[in-house]
Image 1 (cartoon, rainbow, N blue to C red):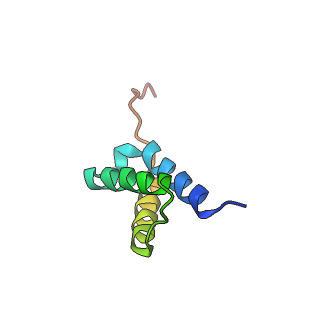
Image 2: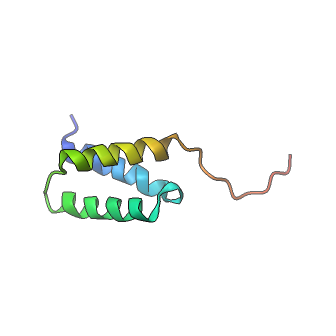
Image 3: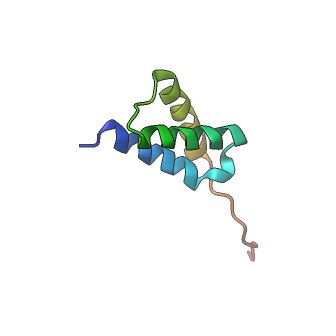
Length: 71
């Protein structure tokens, strides 16, 4: 069973993998929250709400493609 650390680390990793969809503020928030969790401090309810919002937005986006369509 996952604990809160595992869940948030996974969500933060998902956000980082989709960094092209993050704003500058989002990137700073993700980095800050990663440091906080690494230090063993649990996020506040407000921080969890914001992470959920960012995660929902970026995981709903389709990956950008850089290849040329030869279709």
